[in-house]
Length: 225
Image 1 (cartoon, one colour):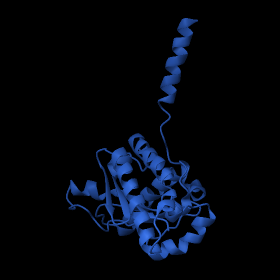
Image 2 (image 1 turned 120 degrees about the vertical axis):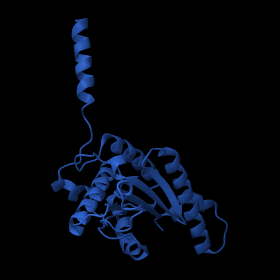
Image 3 (image 1 turned 180 degrees about the vertical axis):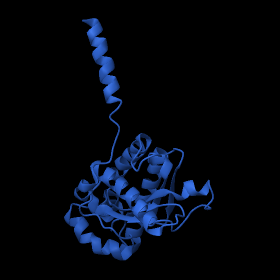
Image 4 (image 1 turned 135 degrees about the vertical axis):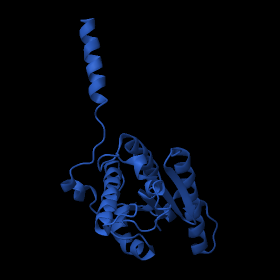
């Protein structure tokens, strides 16, 4: 009896250890990304998306509890101050949570960018999210669910490939896989802008080492207001 319990436990641990994350079938991606915009995130596109976002239960930074303690004064200045403080808190939480190789968190004004090198989140031999990548994206999902008054641009990039159409398709595939994962983990897809930019905007030289850095997904966050 005791021996059977040991065998059962070992079998259970072996099987559960094999349940790694796999992206769902591509034919279902539209369900997960329903409400996402497949365009660059800029001020105009955020304004256009705002009614859809709010209609889906989206939150605004200016509705954050911190605004209740703001002094009377210029509304624009107050809103900017709230946004900067909100995004600063988000940056620090992401930075503290993502101290891993191949990842970086940067902030410029009221925007925060997470740079995810492809090899840090994707499998090397197939186009899918790796076990390590799933762990990283789970952390990001948790933080973004907490700081839910943000729009999210997910942009994929490749290195300099000869076929530009193939590069764009590959970069969009990476971005969509990340978007699907975030949607599966509670992120409202109406917050998302998803784009594949191919080999544009390299951040390193196009040599053997730099190519690895240029293959990446960037998650840019902007306050919803």
